[in-house]
Every structure is written in C-alpha cells, then in structure tokens.
Amino acid sequence: MPQLPTIDNCTACGACIDSCSHKAIRMEEDINGFYNIVIDSDKCIECKLCETKCHILNQKNLMRHDPCKQPLAGWSMKEDIIKNSATGGIFAQIAYDMLAEGNTYVYGASLQDDSSVTHIEISSCEEIHKLQNSKYQQSVTTGIFKHVKSRLKEGYRVLFSGVPCQVAALYSFMGNKADLTNLYTIEVICHGVPTNYLHRL
Image (tube, rainbow, N blue to C red):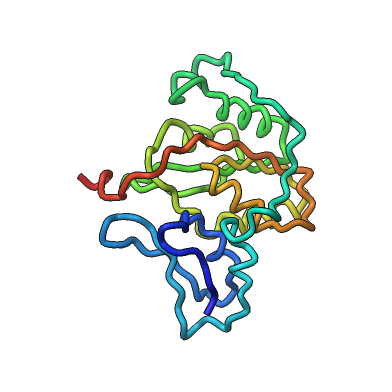
C-alpha cells in the first residue's frame, strides 16, 4: 500500500486523489469534521503514483515559475470589486484583467448553497463573484488539478488561487517536466482550517 502522510501531516489537498486513475483514493470527513485521505485497498494497484504527487513527501522537488522575488502589496481601484471582496480585491482584479484579455481560465474557492466550499473553474468576468469574499474553511479540490493540467495543455493561461498547501499540491501534481509558463498562482495566507461542523451550526 502507498505510504502517504499520516493524519497529523496530511493537508487533504487532494493531489493524490487526482493522480489516481483507478479511483482508489477518496476524501472522507472524520468524526471531528476534518477531511482525511482514505485508500481503497481493493482498487489500489500499488503503482504509488500518489506518493510522487504528494507535496508533503516531495518538498525538495517542488518547481515553481516565480519571477517575483519580493513581496508586493496591491488593491483594486474598482469600487464594485472592492465592495464584493473581503480585503482590497487584488485577486478579483487580477482575475478580471486576465479574463478580459481572453484565453484564460481562473480557479478558486467558491461557497456553495449548503455552505460547503469547493474549488471551481470560471471563464468569464461575470463569474468572478463566485470566487470572491472569505470562506474560512477548507475547500474540496477533487478533480481540479486535472482540469488545470488539461487547460494548460490546451494552451490556455491559468490563474489558480488557494491556500499554500493547495498551490504546492498543484505544482507537485504538474511535475518538474511540465511547462508552467502559462500558470499563475496566488496563495491565500492560511492559519489552519476549522472543523466543517462550523458551517452546519
């Protein structure tokens, strides 16, 4: 069986799930309301591809296309973007500008009708509102890394926003040989995630 990180070290980023073509890995919520990775031994063929895509197990091998070597501050100058954003709206503004130029897909966390949070894909400026504002809980990324990889192979630009472990998971999933020229990522500062029970109160 694959030796994935223990519950104490796993971030439930979902890269291992997307890497498994046999659907032997799934995400389950534990008794405390946190996501855990579960391997189905009946479906697993022990190829261990999931291990090679895990960013926790491969920190030294992570490759990033990051020409900016210093932190920058910014905010949107559009009142409607700021009004619908939790802070200065910098992510929404960057997403808006890239989508307006065309040939771009944007990925980010979206609050669902049942108050859960899921990463989704958008392709127009009119959809940016789906990714705005704070969610304060972990988003499910199952399937999203495969979508990003497909869009990049098709020649599109991709803007991906997530917490640091999710961004690291994307780079790890893509692998060191992937062409990341058209991949842009924005990391949301994370202090840890609360139990999923909070949004059900």
